[in-house]
Length: 385
Image (cartoon, rainbow, N blue to C red; front, side):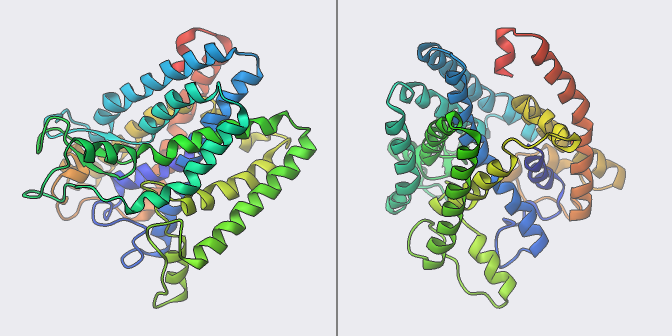
């Protein structure tokens, strides 16, 4: 959760945030690349462990019918938040006629929960097979080409092309007809649906004896991580953007690590989930000291923190710009849909890191308070925020 806020702080604060993708090897710097790359671990873990959390509810005795009902209502709530609240707090405007919304990770989690509500009634082995098959096989769909909007004067995707954008190809769709009310599909549903299904099946590991569980986590984590290195080195399947030799060894390493997130390729998911399994093995059963408790506080209120960190990162960028006498109009624009920000907008990475740490610390008291509320009370609505 905390690492995710670094990425969003960079989006609002860095002076080159609107100029190019930080993982663009030709233009990026090593520090900028890894400032973005390290946050790649966030979304896969959010979606995967959301599935695991659903399995934990079943382990604690929640009937499957009741769990399905919760997953559907929670999923619909997340989709509603993505289409309404998040669009406003990300852009700080209400310009819906031009940009109706971003379909990001909360959208993907919402739909994945709705699909999982049906999948949990299947045998756990079938759920695992569906999840893994979608993760491993979805890059075979990269060859399916549909109309994508490329700018003014270019054709807009029709109905079925828009459906395919929602399912597998990131891009702009126009539910009300181009060029009105554009919607950016940043998180197509495939393979996120499979990631959550795999995470649900993964939860069964926590029925094992702790020693056996840690041993299995180490094995699967090492296998997935090594598998990533081998498959990426072969450069044949698993990512639509192959790596290439660059003028320097450092740039070549960056190219190797620059896997595709939208949608998450097989190699992107192997690169992030493999080390995550190793981390889970390391953390399993360890004593939770003060540092661990500090971060766990945010993890106990994930949606609450997710909403507040957007507001906080955006507000800190605005306040810092006002203090420094820098232009602020871009911070109230439609961001990626707006013209390039005026010269002088934004700061370097040093200020990005400073404001990120400040934002995390500012949110700690609120998250600690809300975590306490959730621990003391059991009102039904608390499970939705």
